[in-house]
Length: 216
Image (cartoon, rainbow, N blue to C red; front, side):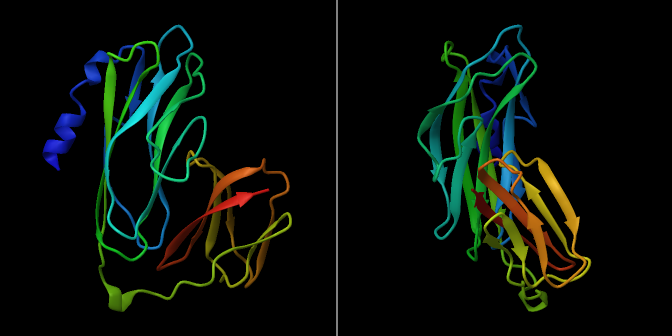
């Protein structure tokens, strides 16, 4: 893994019009049956609007895992080969975002993408995600309740418990709503949310589940 991370940063110094945040590599863990999002931002530090492009270098994902990529233009159904982002104004940022759900299989995903300014492909950065998930403490795990239902303009948590927390976030990971449950069944009005993909998280004392839902 150390070799992969070292190689990923080889071209970072050539990128002068944007900065990577939190860096060119993410090493992290993911929980079973949970969708987790890992963002690498390209902050525009130039005096002009930037147009960014990207291309997959490699993707090794354990069998049974779900993985997809998003940028500031779209979320794709899989680890798409390449793409061009929306223009990035001065002081704003583009991003590449890996969404991973390990389900029940342990292992490590190694995913690498190269990103560059569209008009300057010779100066690029290779971004690396190393995401691991493994079984621990199976005997102590708590059964996870049924999570979410969509009914018209309502998001329903049918089998929640008091002191559990539900969060709604956009695909960039920004939390738009956080609500503590106060009854067994909770209904949240989602009519004011623009149509699109959202991450809905239900968290209790011994579990956290995340689902990707399309509000329409």
